Image (cartoon, rainbow, N blue to C red; front, side, top):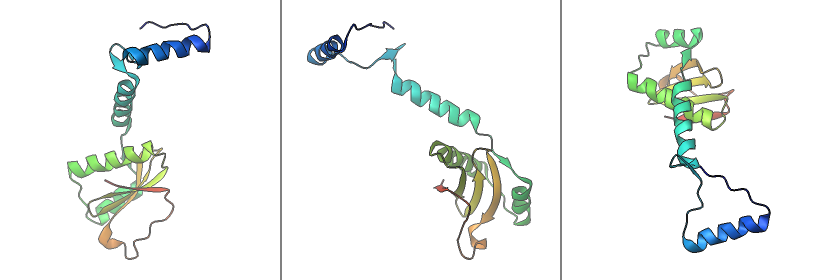
Length: 134
């Protein structure tokens, strides 16, 4: 990658205008990849590699007590929902997967509690700052 040093703003503006007139791309690339390409690749890799959900003792007990069995795909969707919550800056999220409701502490990557929707008579969830339907 070649970096140009501009002496002043006028020269920078002139270079930009010349590129626009000649149809040259002003997009900076590194090894043929644009900033957007690199950003999306890093964001995707970070989201997938950093999320490793744990279930608190309470949540594990709730799953057992309520005889909730999750499929591999449901677990993937729960993880994807947590990633989406993390990307939005949510700290404590309700993540809905099919008829299952999970409260996830996103920074700790921990499922705090779990329930089937049929068990929530009033459908009210408290102490959350966001919700994801996965």
